[in-house]
Image (cartoon, rainbow, N blue to C red):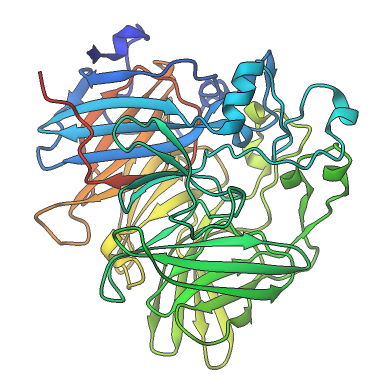
Length: 503
């Protein structure tokens, strides 16, 4: 089967190449046009391509995000409550093959059969029936919508409040909950959606992840898996205080967590008035803490952090008794008003994410923080072989404008030593997602390879996959997909070949 953008979208694309001088603006209508409800699952070769796919680009881009945003005429309160849908774009001999499938969790199957929501969402989506129907119902549906990773022969769809959901890595068919060969005790044992890939600091590649149970005291379970998916190390630590941990950084010695200064009032959630995430608030005058958990023996180290909020870390490394952590910092918790329509977010009223560096003196317990870039950004990445090592290059999704908060419309490469920047822009009508770096198979240089990103092309009302040369962000190819996928979350690269025999 062959599919092309023309199968579902007839409008011509205006995203054939980066614009020379894109306007420093965007249309709110263009941005929110991505929030449709995915109704199709497709499979076939992608033929609508601008440029040429590099012949050395061999493998699969996996990407996860909310797909089902409406049931029975009721839309989710926030897109992060939408059921997960995994996209796979396989590259082989200069061609691309597309599959997309919903993650058919038990909750998804139940609600599809009922034709309506039967579970509350963490971000505020309510079951039909008002407050009385939602009060005291604290069940969580595993929506498996945050990340997808291919490791140890398993393709895992991840959502941090529950165990992974295993998928067939080629067909994307749902196999069911995964206990990681008995490592996880129950389907609801947390397994973060932000694993880190250790390139070999301990003699072999490892997938490192954590599970969090929080309350007045928080418990972190750190787990490390070898390339075959077998558990090779674990530890469990209890630390004082409520924690909201979405990500962590990794060095040869430490798993680095930043406990943000947040407080949680569960009463509106228990009473059925709000989702659990809507009950988070910044603690006035509060400062976070770095929780440094050894990857071997020893007690955790707790150090005061500077003010602000962090969703995502970029990388961390050690320099003697100094630990350096690069992260995306916000001046405050960027919470959207629960009463606000997520399709009409007032970007200029929210704090921008900005790339910053914390240098931690492990002997004195002192933390120094400095800003590396003023530009609003998110979803930064480094070369996989530099995870836990000092990096020179960072690739990050950024706003088109140089200052202030705005949607992400460009990909930027930063040279951390010289300060030089390269930018590829999808503005004014395109909106980028997380950049995924694919290392070149025959060149070990830090910036050798390609950057892949899923782009919302509002002119076509469909998505593109852009392939950029990592060294200078020159476009190599743009694939016009016959799919309209909502703004989403995370993905990963695998060397696995999912393509059928080329006709």
